[in-house]
Length: 580
View 1: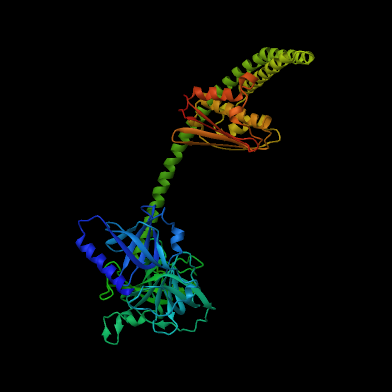
View 2: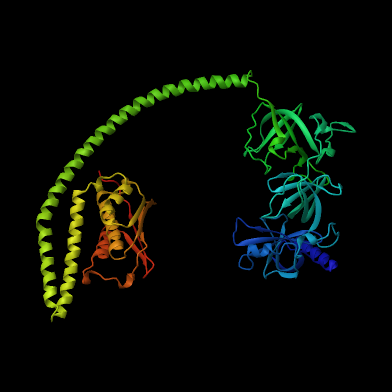
């Protein structure tokens, strides 16, 4: 089987060199699923990192072929990929050559039922399966673990956790299962699973007190990186120079003529301890060497610097605060005095401008109030006139029709039906007239807050029903006419929900977006069939009147309802500028 893999890999390399002019060519490759990566730039694709005896090949799989969660279950399984190889200009994985799978992955051997039953040694020359490693947690950092192997052969092993894995406590004895990568001065486990096998051990290791020069002093003399400190618990004291990252979870510590970075991204961090620039601190943590991964190799690593990873907040202690007798602090004091002086001058100017503007606003409010009073007086006069004439006449007509219905029940069935319809029409007319009278007497249309205007409009009709209003539309988006139409529509819908739908809870919501006003009225009533609702021919003018009002302002009406499920009515129309 191994020589087959070697032949396939060699074929891929030959095709990658000789097939530059070809777009793609068919291949069949066997390997181990090492990780699954979702393509953030093209969400229809997932990438499988397929490990072979000689290299790692990215395999693109469309989401219609296999979902991400299903692929995650195949990690550490031996599979066969059938597809087409091609050269990539952009890949989420390293490498120029990749494969686009044309069929679902063929499972040659599923992953082990117990991931921790794999061997604890690396098998060379075969497929790169996960292996197990036991050790003690030295420190944690975001989604990574730094551990020391139980047999002490590796002083520090880096562990990158698989998605969903939780960081174990520092000092606990753990078993790690993952794919091994050889890195500078150690090993790294990728897509690792972690199991805590022992309680947190007592911290019996004594930190090694060192200074900055000892970081670069070996038995061969000064000037060389002391790689023996990798994974050692050390204690250093120095002066804080400032933050070392935009997130503020690390800072630079100067120890003599040398500097180190202190990483505070450990999960045991319970308080956001503020590290002041210029203060002297003492740090206890695990020493780690960092390298320039983008330009380094295992053979010739490019050293970037030392990083100290504390375990808990107690490992960072401020010895003394920053001094005040410095030129930087004097410059800060002078700058603050200048800012205070400028702020006072600006404040005086703002007070003068504010008082002038407030005086003009009060003058405008008085004028607007006088205009509103004139409008209310005229509306009241018209309301009294309508009430004393048309309302009384229509009430009398309604009583006459009711009497005719009672008399005609003995033999005028057809007349009864028509008279009943006429009575419904007059009742609708009387309801409309009462609403007009209420509108003329009310100051609702003068409200500057539409939420309050809606609440005042529906309050006389709510009864025992619970009506909640959230109308996030500024009054400036309405003209007087569109505000009147919106409130009339809302009131009609609330009355229908209570009278016909017997609703106990009604919710009114509105929003203003992209120049369009939208609002909805939702109730928990008995509902109805919008296709078979009765109209003007049966004496019901509510929905017809709403549609006519919306047609006049290029509006739209949508009804969602069915028997027994309540009703939701959605209204939208373009906003208009506030009338002068």
